[in-house]
Length: 636
Image (cartoon, rainbow, N blue to C red; front, top):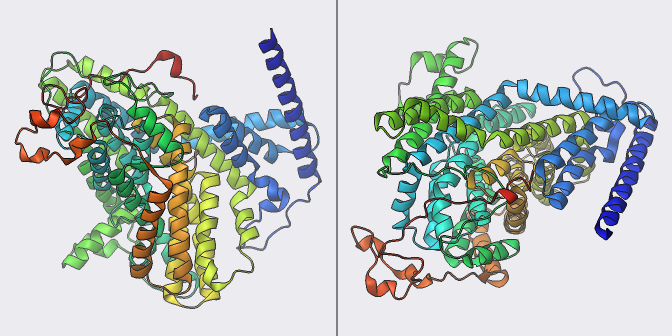
């Protein structure tokens, strides 16, 4: 009875607060003057009507996500609040709310109709199907068993995960969806938390793709840099400027080093320490209980012979196919457009190694990444289905059914992505990014500008959940501003790096970021748990990047001085803040597994290690990871 009364009181207070908040929003917006007409060629100042209220939708979504741990609900309310603000004409909140709901439905449909967004959703679905096939054919378990010969401790497993993440350098989405499912059973067996796995996967997604010279990111980054330099009357190669920014991408570099540092020392702090301790205390082969649903029902088909090729071939097809599709997509786009500046290079073919590299770069720059990844995922799906049928693991109908079952687990991710994109759309209508830029851009000392640009880029990216959008917004402002403050090429390069790196840092932390969502999904980690554990590490590394990277760079100190100093300080800080989370079989760290051709561990060493973790002289993998039905829908 008391519980029902408490719920009724909470519901009543929430309703009253909501009505009052909507009324106040309507009052302030309806009284605000309409934005003044702008001159031709000038950007409309959308934030002029909403001002500080423009940050409300992302703020509501982010706060609710942390409080309720229900991502879909939080995003839904954030979008609805934004559409309510756009629809305000008077104090009639009922009419405005109805208009906002109808507008939100139209926004979601328009985002789904966008060819890029549709490609992302479809590629996620297909990759889910590929992973399901790989798992049912025993490929994932076979790879996990092979890796477990070397990844037989938390240290080695985390390092191997980072290495695989570095190898999938060409796209952050592909990284999140490939690395997590492969390493998840290995990490579960070694009692490494899903939160730590999600952090490693996320840290090797956008931070790697953002600095790779062959990736789906480079086209956007280079084109924005090129346009920014044209605005200050310089025709420098955007690609050459991009290469110059790489040593100054302090956060990208330091977060990758921090992942290895944390893995090797087993030092953890913040919520990650709690998650790791909880994982270490789990009984051997006990089911991993999480509040998420991603790939969990899949396990190898009974009675099949495990083969690593059932994993390597489909996933290798996905990776190689993606690279080939990126090139072919850009090649055909350029070839069909004689006005394209790379037309002659592509049609005439390369005549030197330099031309060859430039040919590849131009093709990647002009490629449609969403289409290319969809094509690669479709090809990998076909290869996976044929392998299952040819090896008589499954019939054609069974293989297709399993492929579709894999897609079903990704449907919730599609819903989250659509809501995140819709939130980004309504944020654009409110001029949230414009407002933040306008507030923070004035009265900037020369030495602090790179740091402020990094922070501003991070704030916008965190609030909007998109690094691409943040780069697109800030780069046209940053390069002319940096040139006006200090007409020095090296200084402009550092400021340009601040935009690119800050956008990735903010995106890395944001709970509404697509790459953060995909990392949670690929690793089977509760999304909010991933965000809460990761943000402490990301903020720590970002603070080091600012204090020992961007501030010194503002004074003209070179990267080859600041990066080593930053690494040393980061290690000292980790030693002071962190606490080692022991592994019961930690003595096995010193076992030279590679000295034994079959990966077996000598019996005398087994006596030192955890007898429950090593059975029959081999580290084996559990058949599957079980999820309790009661926990599946908690986040959503």
